[in-house]
Length: 179
Ligand code: IMP
Ligand code: MG
Image (cartoon, rainbow, N blue to C red; front, side):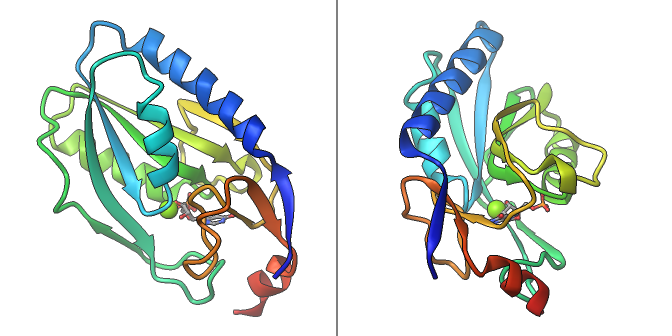
């Protein structure tokens, strides 16, 4: 399927630089743990942690929706087997995108219930017009319209994650309403 560029590699680079600067300033003197949400966050987490100028730990968890179609979220499935001990830590959850917000809201509750000192979230993209959960990202790089996007970790049917830019899948609309 053709992909139309929405955010270039250079724009992402500048956005992640700025994100890392803000996080480095805000978490100075605190015991930061980044928690990457697999699989979509892997590229962002790898780029972000190399730019954060503070010592910090990295943990991972997995969250996915059973999907009726590749673009429609279904029931949320969470795997916390890889999660390190977060008690007393200042946790920053990192994901590719905040869409409805259901995933992030649930994950933040899970981390809070494990005794983290603080829990915030950072995402590359925010599709604010679709967010229905009572949550907004503490940090985000780009606001995007209600379009299905791929690249920089984001997938369609587990493909397109490798693209170094964010693009709109032409035909994604049709896919979205297909079910
Ligand atoms: P939410 O729970 O609705 O906020 O959905 C978050 C998850 O859905 C993200 O972690 C992504 O994996 C996936 N997702 C939402 N929108 C898109 C998109 O436009 N492209 C690819 N994946 C998406
Ligand atoms: Mg995801």
